[in-house]
Length: 390
Image 1 (cartoon, rainbow, N blue to C red):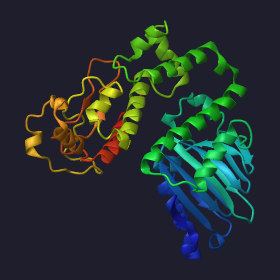
Image 2 (image 1 turned 90 degrees about the horizontal axis):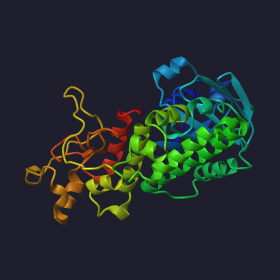
Image 3 (image 1 turned 45 degrees about the vertical axis):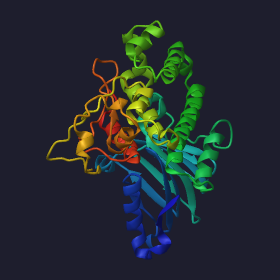
Image 4 (image 1 turned 90 degrees about the vertical axis):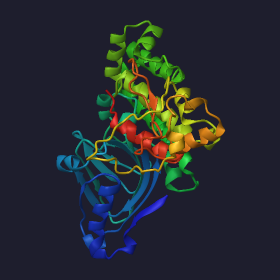
């Protein structure tokens, strides 16, 4: 983990303002008050996990409020799961409040106002997992009922998530950038399992025939992402239901539509393969086909307005001999051409699942796109964030 903030390196009178700034930048803006600003101490360490983040926080007594004002200022649209490692901490959200003891877990939503309170004279400590809400395949309105609720972290399935977060917080392992992408999946899957466990215990409709069918559909999609013909109509036919009923099921149980879910999962798998050195011998177009992006073509996909260029992407100089006449047939070129492709082709994106438009890979002549494979992984994430779930 990277040490982001340590109050021991800052003058006492400047610590609180510095803590406010660093938490607003690295997590989410909150209004923070403390009983004695000059006696305040805090420490923050963080490790990115793909789109998610794990952080360890230690602090003395404070009150953190996130109102609609802070939400309008900045909202990452995250779910946040905290493991209390020291002290006793309280939180209130959605007219629900909990006093969370050491060893327990608590969930809250960055898009809804909340208030967190830490009392006492000793240092409180927590491990925090943050991830985009779109990654959680559970009904939003039901997950809301678990926010600001103390969840057991020492028994049942909650102990698995708690042990996972504690292991990352203790920094006992050394992770490569590609390891963190895999750990992102594990973190979200464990969180999903814990929340589903409590939802099924408290909300019997989750075990209804409709929810059982929804789980079968999700499993079917995961098993068939590599099929180009996977789309809402074929999914509905495989489960002997109408497409309209399929969409209704997703409206009830999923934060995104069917096509958006398929596209997101395919991009996730493609991004993971692009980050895997064992697959360096594969071209980006091959990886696209591997996850169901049929008939990839080498041409620009997302034009950028002239007045608003994409800020974080490089401006590579391209080999004119390679770019000239490449068209859509470069996929059959030899090894040297494949190496040039890998260095210069950027985005893998699908124009929409379930329609007649074909997915594409970007033409090397598009100077807005990244040059290297690691940049491709990040660029896929930029593309996916531009395409919110329908």
